Length: 390
Image 1: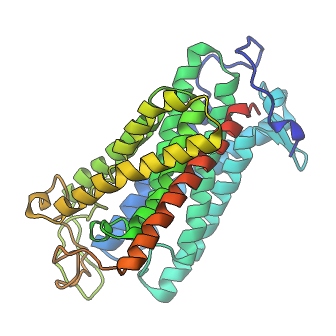
Image 2: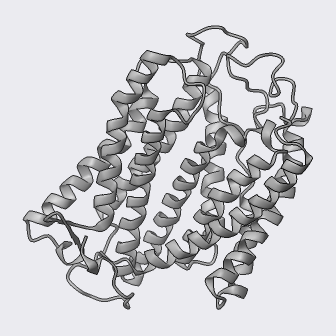
């Protein structure tokens, strides 16, 4: 990789390669990551409602469409930049003799990894049947590739944003925040098993959230510099998950595997989104006051604020989700997997006693530390992305 991949940030210019509209490859990358997030939620719902089906389900195709779009789009971008007098040649890096935007190389690698996971996943299911856990080996490969595509899309948008004039910069900032929200959705899918409503009174739930959410929120506001960056990312995440919660059950589904412990007639959604919108809003309120602080001070204040605001709100709301008031289509506490035992914690609306008292207290203290470290990593990544111009 060329050492000139990162250059000092410069004021908007009128150079020949400054774009006057959002580039086509950015729109395609945004479409790809959206397809992946819809597909992965749909696929999880498919497994919970129908079971193991053919590899060629619409959900699988929606996921792999992301890898295909990333591979074709970024492959073309790299080849055209390498072998033609592309306008992006001055805004590219050199990797193994090929030239292209840094984000294109990351996207292309992520797309290749996603496509590679497909036959591995098919073989795994044919050999072992339905996954017991989300993080099976082929799903880990798929998740790594998917996050790679999303990070590549972020870098593509950030580099274009750092080169663009004011007229287009606002559009690119909004797209950056949208892709950041897709990354947040992807990260929370990885820990979906520990953020189900039955785990909302456990330390492992808040530890998982504290590791993954602050980094995304901090990265978003530090890179774009917009006033309500964290709130916008959290709002996109919330709207996306709510849409799936309300739309997926409208379509019929029937289990194809046994044993069927619970009658299912429609697709089962993931559940109500986490209330990350609350700490995101409070972080945006606090940010102007700590803008001049060093990163470690911002990370300490932001991490503690995130934890202190998220835990009580989510804890109380978790209690509500287990109550009769949430057993409706709006809050989604009425849906069970077809293999859900009638005596399970979800079916009987009980919280999982995952930790003892000392373990719980230790786990929550670790969660605070995780939130601070996660916030610091997000700020550092945002500083890096603000300087990327290639």
